[in-house]
Every structure is written in C-alpha cells, then in structure tokens.
Length: 83
Image 1 (cartoon, one colour):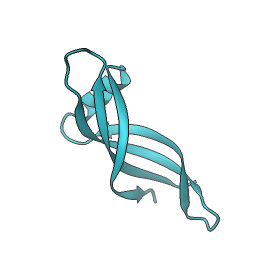
Image 2: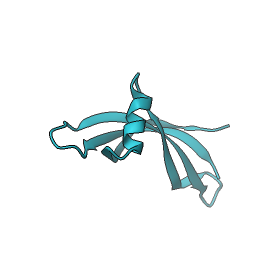
Image 3: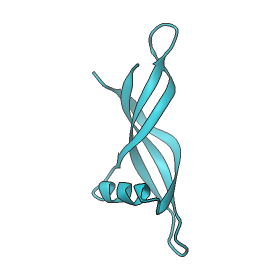
C-alpha cells in the first residue's frame, strides 16, 4: 500500500484550565489503500511524526503525554509520496 508524508493544520486544545488553545501544523505519515486502477485512495492509517517549527518535538511530547487534545483539520500542501 502507498505511504506518504502529509501536513495538516491542527487545533490543540489544552486539558489544563486557563491555558489557551493553539493552532499548529502537524506532520503525519499515512498509508493509503490502492484504488481500482492502483492509485493511492482512501486513508488506512495516520501517525503523527512531529509538528513544524522549532518547538515541534516538544509539542509532540505534550500531545503524547495527553496534555492536549488534537483536532486534525485541513491538509496543507500536497501529499509527499514515499519512493
């Protein structure tokens, strides 16, 4: 199945009262099913790799520690297919 790297805008909502929500760009790795002619089709799974910017890995750790809820929004740019 085809794999790709893709960026999505995400909304991070803190679970701690009094902390402001923030918008970020998440970088994900996806697997997609092949359609009837062998082209990448529907999403099979998606895994967060990091966030863009200098604080990307720190944000990922906070999401992984469940300090934030993450809503995945619109895709940013094209899918980057693995070779």
